[in-house]
Image 1 (cartoon, rainbow, N blue to C red):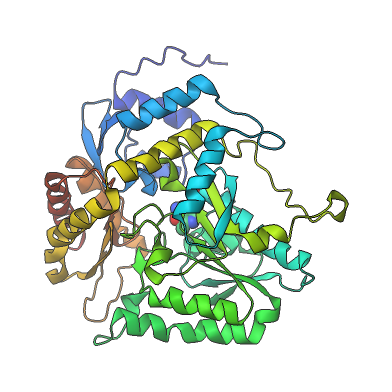
Image 2: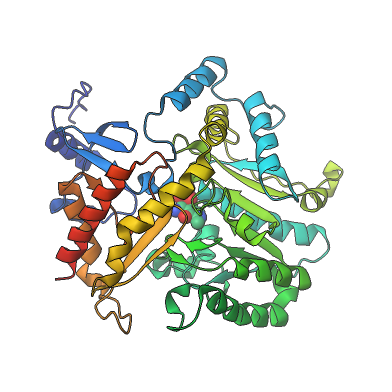
Length: 458
Ligand code: PMP
């Protein structure tokens, strides 16, 4: 057997790519693609920039799968991480606790909508969704309503890749293969404003789409535990967006029909939508709020589910009643991740991030507005710090290009040749950058994205 090369003295992209492809299997990747498209090993990061081993650099326009907030290798967060590492790297979180975990929970409770005052940690977004689903079902069971076993989701929603999270999602590309293994869900129409009539406002359309939800809840509320939703943006579902009025009305419906509302803010939380949390724009408090990704500014895997006192109370009893929530992950509440999350929240305050982002978001909108006139761009849409341009074969009728043509890949490749990491989802070119991005970098992304779209739609 060949001995692995322990030197780890990488000379260049090519050498590292070969070693990688000999032993690794990457996420969300048809590995055969790498026969044609290079894999890019990254040596280091700095602010919005990623540097490879051949001396090329790339603006991380997608925040490395929507996690990065304050740039790569941020000195303030680095210092917090190293300080925490010198104190405590990890400790079992059952029967034991630690200060960063406690302080973070206190701050999350203080900064999220009113009724959320209990925090349960997970270690990635999908597990946060699993936790919320299990808690909701288990709450009803503890309340003597064991028939409430079903979940309602939206067309084109996404909540992660583990079985429960996949089951409450609706993106066929990820879900279809595993369908026989998944629990069934009640899927209702999405308020996604891409499909609104020409003269219809976002608000009117999103409101109109509530009918399908109302109908489902009216008919089946006795067997429904919760509605699961991504507030304001269906990110993995092509960055489709909707009006906050939908959330506001949905909260009322959930109350009316005694059904939980699970807000999955794993992708949109921590400022992506323009407010700290998307739910704020609808002035609602969900029964469960799932957060992850930006919680640690893109440093470490950590997620949290916030819930209400009344949910917590339904589990609080003598041990022998077996009403406890026994879910656990080895790295629950990892202190390094909590320490980094605390530094992240400090930075939101010291940098006045939410307010500063208003200017950045406005600039992003202006820099990309010209694409609205492109004959093969159906629309440029934006919610806060997320902007998307959707390529179509027929603009008037909004007919998509067949997915097999992989037009987005052409934009991706053009980006890589020009210092940009743009990673379209299907035909949708989007920006979800670290908040430290500057005007020159946004202008560069706009220029390269426009050229890329031009090439891809020829
Ligand atoms: N929910 C939403 C809305 C997401 O966008 C994602 C990830 N893209 C997840 C859940 C899953 O998070 P993770 O990848 O950390 O498991």
